[in-house]
Image 1: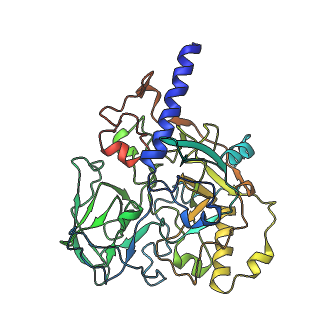
Image 2: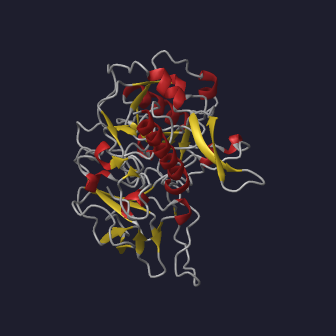
Amino acid sequence: MQHRSSRWILVIAFTALLGVLVAACGSGDADNGKNKKNAAARATGPRGATGTTDVTAQSNPATGQTAPGTGTEVNSGTDPVDGGRLFSPDSPWNTTAEGLPVAENSDRMLELATQRRAVKEVKGQEGLQTFIRDVDEGVFINTKAWAPLIVAANTEGSTPTKFVCRQSKCGSAEPKVPGSISIPPNTTPDPRYDGWLSVIDREAGMGYDFWRARREGNGTISYQFGKAWTLDGPGFSRPIGVDPERAVGARGSGLPLFAGVIGPVEVEQGEINHALAISVPGLARRNFVQPASVTDGVGNRKSLPAGARIRLRSDIRIDERALRNLKGDRRRSADAILTALRTYGAIVVDRAAVPTLYAPLGTSSKLIRGSELSWLRLKDFEVIALPQIYKDPPLSKVNLEGPETGGENRQVQSGSAAGNTVGGGL
């Protein structure tokens, strides 16, 4: 028994390392310990986020691909989320966290969630060295490089655009991602940040997530993984052990890219009526809870799992001085976000260099610049009592040699879109 346990520990350790190097190559997990002051700029989930919207984007004659634009501000007039709730009224995204019991080990989970596993090169040595760094940065609100690019379909001026998958298997067939969607002509995912793209089609009642999307020289958008969501559905998938076909998503937790974002209309109106999405540095490896359906965590197994809901503690001391320094719309934004974190809380969707909330890519700096809540720490939250804990990969898919994912990528974690669309599907 002792021998079998030791071998399993080695399998998990190796899988976690590959999760850092393969599944999260765009996440900024490499760290030399000297970049703390730049952590906010690197805040990201391992799938990254996508690009910008700029009508001046030009085709590269050498590659045939369209270069990313330089960015267009998203305000109330162009907000694809449009300040409204998405998903069903009883969705976890739309139910409050008020009155829910706190997990007994809440403080310990939050402490472990600040411990970030990273890799670095060591001069004179081959390979990479893994290490743990305690993250002491506060909450960052991402609106730039690693924020999701979200556009609305069928709006005025939209152009029918062909969507083409670059692989033989690009996600579940039901519901299916359409081959053509009418989107703004300047929609340009940025491959530098793993090409995150979400399209909200309210006419069809659907939302579409794309991973590694890019605009090609012929005007089409190609991608490596796509997933369709019904906007009146629950906003999450069943666990990978129950429904392996639908469980994987563009995010490492399987949750929608556009769920839990801070919409410009919402902060302009000063009211957010849904849970927020948050990423943490030390996301638990292998363990997850619903509404997550998979995980790409590489942290301590007793850390905060994907799918957990955290809530701002009622006794937390608000930094009134920091809030007073915010002017106009930014102060209203900060107040709305704080209220939402108390009322609805935040659902853990991914891992990131620092604790990170998300607004749509290009959100106006007049509304959010990212540092509005930098004084807030993970220890200022409490973890809501966890539901049933699931394993990724499921116990039935694990043997002494590691996850039975098949193919050359058998060690890639299933929380990675790469692991489930390039020979790694469970």
